[in-house]
Length: 185
Ligand SMILES: C[S@@+](CC[C@H](N)C(=O)[O-])C[C@H]1O[C@@H](n2cnc3c(N)ncnc32)[C@H](O)[C@@H]1O
Image (cartoon, rainbow, N blue to C red):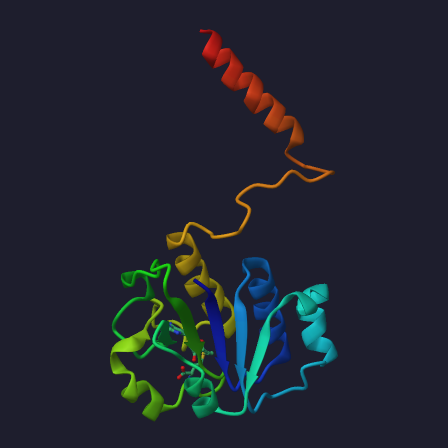
């Protein structure tokens, strides 16, 4: 099972940089559908993705059709759009035999209407109030991707890690002491 974040014609380098960082941290493939609003080696984008850029599996596609042509029978695609009335939390993303593709729209105009209509049942909304027009693209990616990963029990990801300068180190020891004391009672 592989998760893919697919960005349709992203415009802002900082968003794609942030998303690349999230993809690097979650072993998620990043598919970019051209045209992009920036050069891939843009400084701002690298700054947003910091030094994680080379840790991401990035796949570029000439256009939407070229991307769709890469999909096979085990690939399950979802279109992430506020226009849907089905929530992204209503889907199960847990089939080990499938690869999950989450397609996000351009910052200005979202996804093409024809594409959304063609895959009508695949559109998913992130619940939102009417105080804003839409969520930020990179935040939308994080919300949907984390829900899929949570359901998949964070495959290959560390739920805890001991760092050399661990800010909670003493608390781990305290926790162990606490557990020992409980056991002694
Ligand atoms: C800034 S929004 C684009 C807004 C655009 N006016 C539109 O019509 O979708 C960029 C992308 O973030 C995602 N997005 C933002 N808010 C969302 C929501 N409430 N539900 C689902 N997707 C959302 C969508 O993929 C959207 O195409």
